[in-house]
Picture 1 (tube, rainbow, N blue to C red):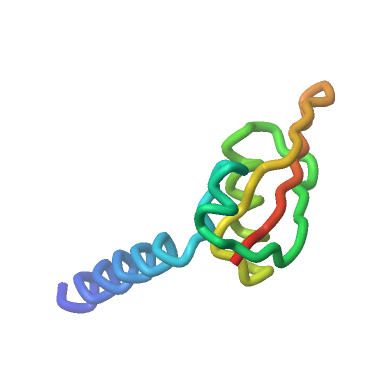
Picture 2 (picture 1 turned 120 degrees about the horizontal axis):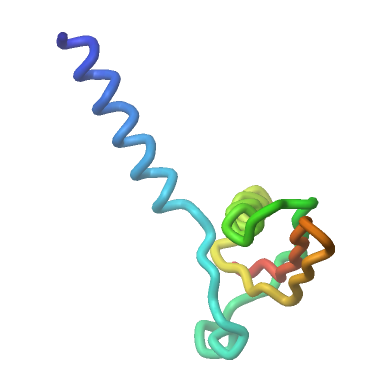
Length: 89
C-alpha cells in the first residue's frame, strides 16, 4: 500500500513539474510587450487533430529551449494537419 501511494505521489509531482515547464502559446502582438527573443522556428509532422498539432508544437518548443511560441501558419490537407510556429525566450 505504501509503495502504491509513493508511486502515485511521484507521478502527480512529475506531471505538475512537466506542466509548469511546458512552452506557452502567445499572440503575436504580445511579443514586443513581453520583450521576447526569437530562438527558432518549428513545425509539426502530419497530425490528425488540432490538439495533437498544438501538443507537438509545445514539445518541440520545449526541446528548443523556448518558453513561448506563436503559431505562424496552419494547414489541413485531407486528414492531415500541419502547423508552424516561431519560438521565443
